[in-house]
Length: 434
Image 1: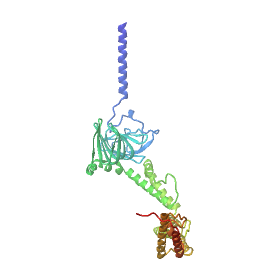
Image 2: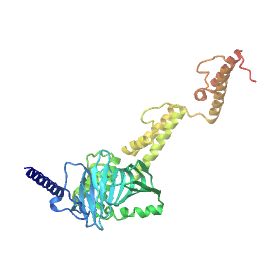
Image 3: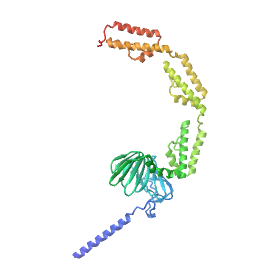
């Protein structure tokens, strides 16, 4: 009986162990080399509509894979997607936040939408990032790259080279890498940090600038031109004041660029033609060069007349009397030139007929002397402790000067004489000076 029980327990143990081994061997599959696609029964779905789009994929070469399927590019990259490359192939992911991730050959990063950044997880190979809000993770490093950075990942170490901006490392230690620095990091920690010369930096980055698909893919070039034209048309819309609105009328380059990648080239060309036709048929053309030149002269004259208004103290007010050049210039563009010329003549006539001319040089000189005397008399008033008060007793030079300009010279002289008499009646001597 005891022998049977022991034999039963031994058989059960062997069966369970064999079952566990079978299950594990079926669930844990070795990750294929980047340029080897998964077998068809292991391939993930081609898209994950429930996950947010974080960028768009552009392929350069015959061995680019999107979620382990061969691709020629054009797919939206969603959180959780993988992009891998083989020999003589590269890929570029333009992120929706404006950043760019360039992937070298034999590299297989995963992309995730993190809480506050786009996380690029690199297992092996070479990646360059350009932009802010991009987190990088390798077997050796985790950090935030707000910059243009090159990352090389091998089995033994990660090499980070910063061309511009900074990289804030959180693992293996908290450290900030500055521009032109290169760090080598292994599983045991940071092995070295050094500053690179211009020639050394030049040897690190050319691969991602000259050989990425951004320059060679005709679809990329076409969509870049489309977006540039669309942004230019929106600027023309704003400059003319046409007030066309909607998603077609946007100054966001990335908005137009990403839309173009999702539609046939003929549709993008048709959109540009439609905007051009709308500007031509439904909005007055922009003012000609000579009109702009005339309005520039008009605005300069109007501003000069307002300065004269202030200098004389004439106190003319209203939108016609403004020192804002753009206010006069924009108004002039909207009206016939004859009306703008009439406005300048009206201001000149108003200044001539309804406001005394600016004081002459000798008048200003007299008032300067008057103000200096008045200020000196107020200081004497304070020094003696006479306690004379009122607007006549002020130490503000500009107050006395401006008042003098508005009255006859005889009245200003009389004011000085009155203050002098008052001081003579004050018998309190000032403090003795030793």
